[in-house]
Length: 100
Picture (cartoon, rainbow, N blue to C red):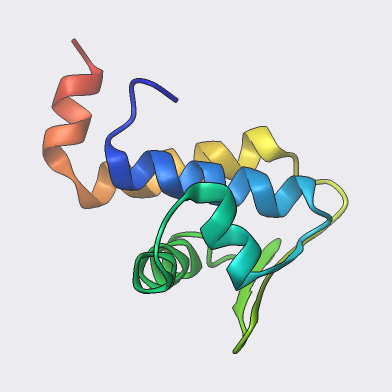
């Protein structure tokens, strides 16, 4: 976690929090857990929703809650790998610094 940039680190923590919370959390609880504002949570949630689009994962943003629906065979490690790959493809500088 310490090697990640701020936004990616928060996305990872949010993803982990959702995954370990059986995939359903209140937005207010997420803000409190991550020590962030609601606008920041919205930004992170929308980013995760874009990055985790595939047939095995659904990231759902409701008015008061966030939901992560995954197939039984998807692990937190696999979700993290997807997040990192997506982040690398959207941030070329991140790729070059990770290769050092």
